[in-house]
Length: 258
Ligand code: CAA
Image (cartoon, rainbow, N blue to C red; front, side):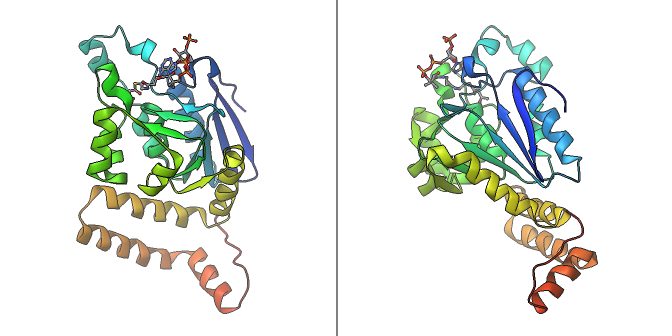
């Protein structure tokens, strides 16, 4: 397996596990970390032996944001010419499901990375926030858009304009996270959820992810039509035949494509 400087990469059965590993900077997402993370998950996405990916950090911090020290001295032309943060778009194009296992701080780009994942499992010590306003900027990795879609305008404005942090319970209440679990169990719970996802048909999980993501991009009628057409298309797959036959025969499905 490729060696990385800022992340640890493992595979457990059909599940990929990527751990952000810059403890000296609370896993701040500098350019090198972004490039390594994206390369690692793209390789998993291309590997039929991986059905889901868990992204996690340390007990203290999932990630405390983009790396402020790396950005501080940049000028407009530097940011524009480098198209700073564009690399994250590749993360959002992954086809296999991704799960963020969040313990401690998920701030700024850390919260935005968690929101790029398909679901967020939070430890009860998690703290989410978009504190960029305190640095004289706004979220730059999609936070103003994804947070607003996830939790609605009222809460998104509150977080983005005040920069305050919310705990796991409030994040759960407002729909930012999928589940809250004891902090010490967060990686295990995320791995368990990922194993469940990875036990399904890989292409069907990809299609389901595509359909849910379409809800962020399209109007309701268009989205429902897109979903219905995807639904129809799955009737061309062996896994649909197997899944429905297994139900009728009262047994567990043996999906071929996983
Ligand atoms: N970038 C660079 N370094 C960071 C960092 C970041 N985002 N967050 C923490 N660090 C570094 C600190 O500078 C410190 O390094 P030194 O020991 O060399 O001083 C080390 O990590 C430990 O951090 P603290 O001593 O600050 O730890 P703490 O427990 O006292 O505080 C914290 C924790 C509240 C998370 C605090 O570190 C903090 O406020 N971090 C910044 C949070 C933030 O503003 N994030 C948004 C970044 S901008 C962004 O993300 C833009 C975007 O939209 C993509």
